[in-house]
Image (cartoon, rainbow, N blue to C red; front, side, top):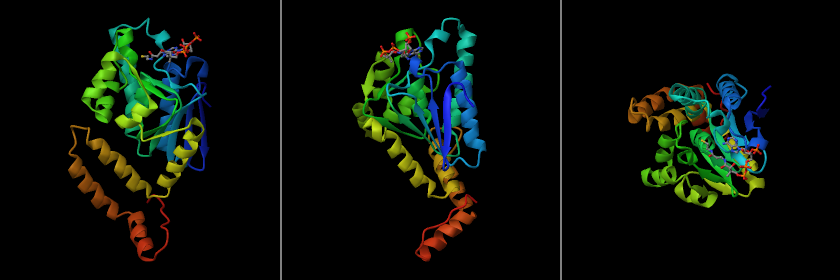
Length: 259
Ligand code: COA
């Protein structure tokens, strides 16, 4: 049980809802630590196949790091806050072997935009607003925002958002490619769930392969093409790849087992 998160597993889809609506779901230390634990659950619980992260209420996904915790920070404290958050939550989501999808139901600012960007892809309600307003506080993003925003929307657009602290609406986010789909808020979770269910019909080890090879594009320590070749080869030895080819030839749906 978590203090600041609601979690539920519905037939393999693990819904994580950041639940501090009175503070627009701002990420304080407890939320970060609990998100870390919930993400660890995704890694370790075999009954979780796909995760969806959203925010409680109809106003905010996450309106950023909790600014009330900033006042006591010095250089070491600031570095630790960023480093721990990146390690336990943001990088861990990005590297998660199972898909993690953001369903952005309102403000996704600062750490909220960074949380959405750490997910493998994003859907948003038409009320969503995205931004990195840290410059208003004399800061820059600390949870990977400078890197992932450039990766997702390009340097020029990213630097404009980073330097102005301006918010963009869901329409603009769609046009920028920051989100894949924009929906009326009532359809946000149903559509996200539908995509999660479609992914769950595929071979889990191949899904993991998609995530890791796509991540390699942005990882200077890896050669993504070589990783693709190696992963492609390894997957041929899985039961699921044999089942996939067999099912195709027998004109039936494959029954994948994640082996
Ligand atoms: N940290 C701490 N508390 C936050 C917060 C944050 N990032 N974002 C919102 N809150 C709190 C507000 O202080 C307020 O608390 P209160 O009712 O105890 O005063 C409550 O959430 C509701 O927010 P409020 O500002 O009254 O809502 P609004 O509709 O007028 O404005 C925002 C919404 C998102 C524009 C505004 O809350 C905001 O600018 N938040 C900060 C965004 C930010 O800079 N994030 C990056 C941090 S690095």
